[in-house]
Length: 218
Length: 404
Image (cartoon, rainbow over all chains, first blue to last red; front, side, top):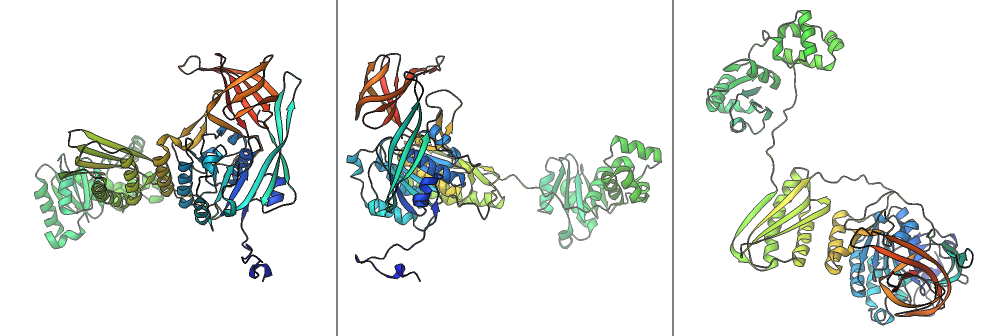
């Protein structure tokens, strides 16, 4: 028997000894760091604008649809771009797209329906453009409810945003940052070629970060 | 034994139904049915034949024979009422011969069924194949086949007239549930499903309120259909009390899916449709579906299709830089350095341009009411973000979105 499974910590709770199945993202550096997104749990992808949150979300969706799973994208601020998603390898016919017209309340209700319906591989709740004023008013009970709804299912709830929402309900918290932008061509005729991104795992804490590149769509 | 009725009578099926619930409408003027259960009711085959002839009238022929095909042959070629007739002397032209077969039999000197029946079966098979063997079995009266039982066409449309007008949704749903249960049972018994449901409500002000649900997958569970109708009627209620209602289902073959033990679990189609219908009730009908790319150079080359996500072939995965739209685009104030943006200010965004790529000039659809014509730049601002900005011919600037 694993002693860690029976001993309690000094704070009085048992360490989470559950071994979860994970979905690799297809980004080798990130998969080495976190071994994929845990199934049956909430994962948060955080960062400022242009930090690569959406790029990572697309990679996750592409990985899931390539395994013939059905996914859902809850687009709180109507910001989803099917062209770049398709370029990342997302099978669009396997993706339910729900536009919420800047209404975070509708987005949370839609997420609630989808998670309780079950059977989805990845459900993305995009809160990237939600203002902090609205984001701070989301009741934390939602995240406990979502965590309970997907527990023991293969569904991943991926939250993308500027700041952490699910906090202790999240099993994985990734913070992204854009490190470098590559422009090519002579001055006056440059071209956005590629960006270098860095993903640091805040939960579980990892001492090093993963670096990966995302090329611009030609 | 089988009875065959042959004649130009319009109600042959009614006559046959008086004697047997199982009958085959072989041709518009020919009906055949088994008489095995009629002995206790009418007596011997002769008495059964007389009873059928009495019921059918003088203008039809009735024949009773050991097999269905023999009865049909007798009814077609012998007049009046015949019971277990001797067909050996019938001309061979009474059989369904092709022209080539008729010529060959004529050259062989085969003119009657008896002569055909006496030929060696292997020789017939060699010369004519299975069609020839079938003909010989017809001539011998030795074809045993199940009847293609006539099934009256099942209708999937019911109507209820109300004594008192209904003003609330709940009692209306109670009535719809009753109709749905009946119709779904009929669908199930005929191994069918419905892909369209139409509710027609006749209102007190003498108008009609019609709602049609087109289902992405054929369904036959009354509970799921009722829930879908409930959500639709809640979103589109009638504007006056209801005096009558009718419900119609469009029957189609059910969807058959080959599942695999190693395939991932996907949402059940009826449950997924219910979930999406609930979400449509919140965010609007035009905001739920699957994205579909369009073959155009338009800046937004996609649309949202009102359909269910379905598993297709996997796509190759690449790491490409994603884009996020600002919908609607943010109006911006841009100061230029030469022809390139140098500083951008918009709602919540402002900064100096560190690097830019462009302009990329695109235009199109000038022959329609919604043309586009613009110059695009990709810009990196001092606030740390990458944006796509564009300028319209009217010199108005917008931030279309950011690379993320």
